[in-house]
Image (cartoon, rainbow, N blue to C red; front, side):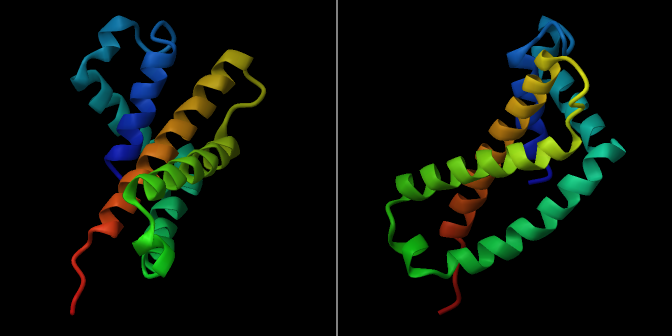
Length: 135
């Protein structure tokens, strides 16, 4: 989660509106990694991202033990995870979005939070689905 979420969020921001987020040069993978690292060290993200980092594995540990999680086809699990992740991502980013700013900037942040949350939770679900279990 520490690597996937910020990279997906920054990539979404750059693709959504490259002029606002550094121009076409920011599509460079090195620029995306640098912006992702900068995003991780910015304090406004901590009150939302740190709790998400802590709670997601705890929740997924419980969810991964359910019969439904184990029995549903993987594509269904990933689809549900993506949708729930989008909702959670928008919810988390909504706490820190600068709502007083322009509508365009707010949409940038909400899109980044949604895509990041969806991809991250789907990835975490995939990992928990196939984690080795002790017999």
